[in-house]
Image 1: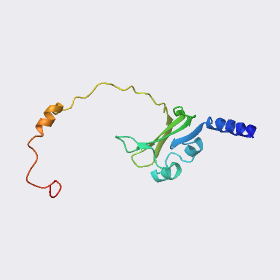
Image 2: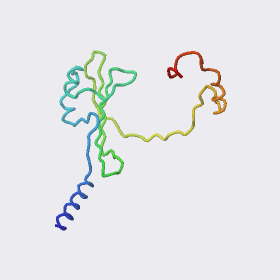
Image 3: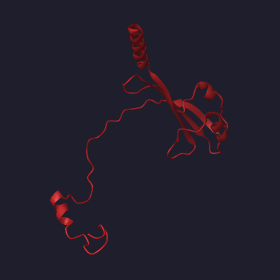
Image 4: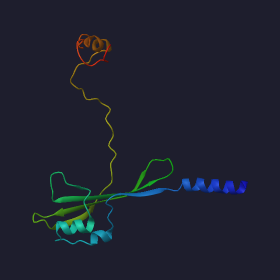
Length: 147
């Protein structure tokens, strides 16, 4: 009986260490990209590749398909194992002009610890308490009836 419990505990411990793999975004394979050719319409691209992850901010004729594979082991942080970004550009006539894989390496941006000053009053607790004196209406509503 002890051997079975030990074996079950060992199996459970080993499966807890197995990595969990996920795919986030629109992860395109080379076969997916090969389905479309220059000159295809927007609807052809949507049908073949799906909805883009995002579009260019100032150019509606540029779409981006962003996908990444991630892996997480036990209680450790999630790690990005692979990332692909495809840039799809359309001409003025709405047909596909180009599709290319671009460097999709993410860059860690350091946080800035400075604070932005805000306008307003910096009141102390005493000023807030004394400032509320006399602001309440004694002759009407709000309280419990009969008191």
